[in-house]
Length: 409
Ligand SMILES: NC(=O)c1ccc[n+]([C@@H]2O[C@H](COP(=O)([O-])OP(=O)(O)OC[C@H]3O[C@@H](n4cnc5c(N)ncnc54)[C@H](O)[C@@H]3O)[C@@H](O)[C@H]2O)c1
Image 1: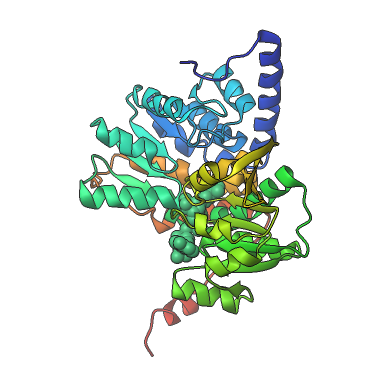
Image 2 (image 1 turned 120 degrees about the vertical axis):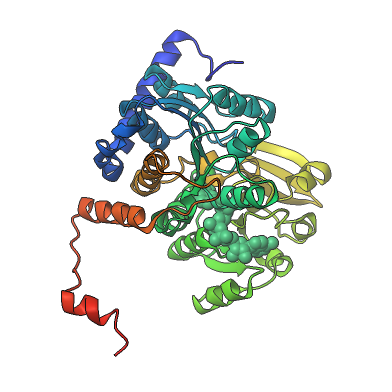
């Protein structure tokens, strides 16, 4: 099994150069992570095993960990999200990378095992595959982190049903992660993926967003900004009401299916766009997903009941009952399959939380083998770093105000 994509030497050199340039580009926009380099020195000698989307921003994190003295092994957290130029540039910089774009599910799993073969002290995961596999193999790491909503759900289920072998910090649940990454990062990059893939005009289109969590909110907000008429589908009555009060149309998916031009799922749930929904859709609609796994759109229904009439630019067009359905990025995360993932300014905050969580797990404190929330101080540390980087000053409570806010009189 190759570690990364195998290429002829001249082509490889070209890609490594491109990868390096893109990593530098991202690095210049990630000042908070850069500012943590002194604090990270405590991780010297540790083996980090990471399963993260192999993007230029992830590369900046991996290189920061390496320059603090850690050994780093990385696999992708999705078969279609790896940027091969970045993977090659990382290998050139002494990081063990097990990932290439478009790998099979089987190779993907082998790459996860290759990272675990390094016996990591810390596992750093996005989606839960690395952590769940580490538990199947009985690996007792010092600690672990989890980057995304779906991964946190899986780790909490593992913890309550079987127990954890080591403490895991749900980075996703830190304010400095989900408020910005899930909302602004995915909001922008999902639209970016749709536009890079299709080059369609969003103004005037009916744009259906399934799920009004942090990701769904971000996408709905950005689609509206581009002039789309946004429809939201939900199962949670509170979120549905929130979408309604935010000015979006709310309705069940089977009704929205008849009206939409573009559909995007952001629920973490399965079969949200079902075969029944597809059978009701208009001609030439677009289906995309931004949730972690490729289970939100019933792709099997398209494959089994439709005829594949075109495959181009990451988009497959299926003909069902004489109508065209365009599936983007095989139903995998559209922002990574068709674009570059989140902007570096957002990943700066998410990965600063990751880096500080690794440092916390390594601080020598006795930690319980459970899901350990990211401490508030750590979140605030990242927020203050980001404000400083943006040149924004804020007020401080006076002593009088501090007292007043704690009193009952
Ligand atoms: N593409 C990316 O780069 C990226 C980034 C962050 C998170 N994610 C993933 O996006 C997904 C959503 O994350 P989130 O943070 O918004 O989660 P969230 O829990 O905040 O929101 C999910 C929403 O989906 C709703 N939902 C569940 N089942 C539904 C159904 N059948 N129909 C309609 N709505 C339904 C829930 O009620 C909830 O409001 C997760 O899989 C997460 O891992 C992807």
